[in-house]
Image (cartoon, rainbow, N blue to C red; front, side, top):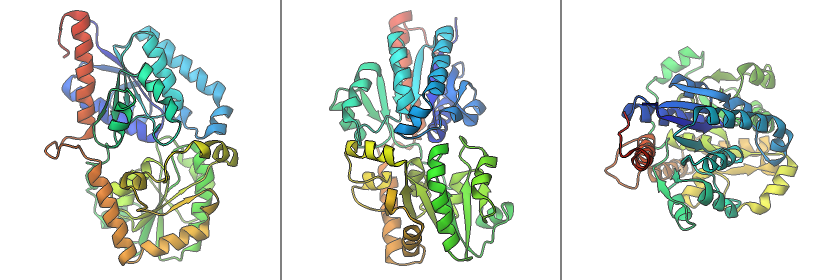
Length: 391
């Protein structure tokens, strides 16, 4: 009996983390499954043969994608050629819509069922593109509670499985031990800088973050987690001689930090999961912003604000993202007081809303996603092979 193979494509740091969690959950249930596709170190560590490295897809913005189009298409065709050779039983695509909806289309053409885990945020922009999911995706697994209805109302078979970060435990390492490990002063407040996971967005966001850090007095230590899609030596070149401590993981840094300066994206959910007050910032190229802004259909940029339906954290976007504004907003939330308390309460509400809708279901989102994937595989298997089970 030939092995059951799954193509899995995750093109950025957060998607790669979710992909690794999902692979682990699937292998716990069905150890004989084989995985190949797009990913990085985390997915390789759990047994995925990454024929395309996710770092090579780490671009952002309309104009930035255009400048990398030849390389991206080369990687895309390499993945599809490998899929034709290995003939997967199912494909899972995670986030990264610019790349992954094309993967979904090619798998659909080959009669391969497609699961979209962490669906594109078409409810925020380009809502007409929902038709792509409806046409090419067999099952959508969504991670925000309002997404299930949005997609179902538009003809997509969508299920809310919870957010992968909603159940993440607080890091076990104590603050004092963490300080020793990274040579930090435990008497100072720490601030985590998270400029993004892609080269272009880091180039746009990090310099202003560093300028804000320079304006703050020496009572603070600054931590910069290294996203798996980025190289440390490259980040060190951007930082130069400024006193910034590089750390390998975001969650412990956030957990032990008094506040954060966080680029829009999954990192804002990580901060909420760690109960870390923060200022959300973001900047893209002027052309990308001009072209993209008319398509945005939501009131807020920060994901935590979208989920809460109100401004829980401050948003500094484009021209408003200046070092002076960042410092001003940080000074409102670093001291104990009503501003900080309100933000902490709002972040707690956001985190609670990202769990399963069933209060008795304590499973991680990846476990619920794995159950849906295996159910689809079993259904396909019953139709094709008369019900032979997966092992």
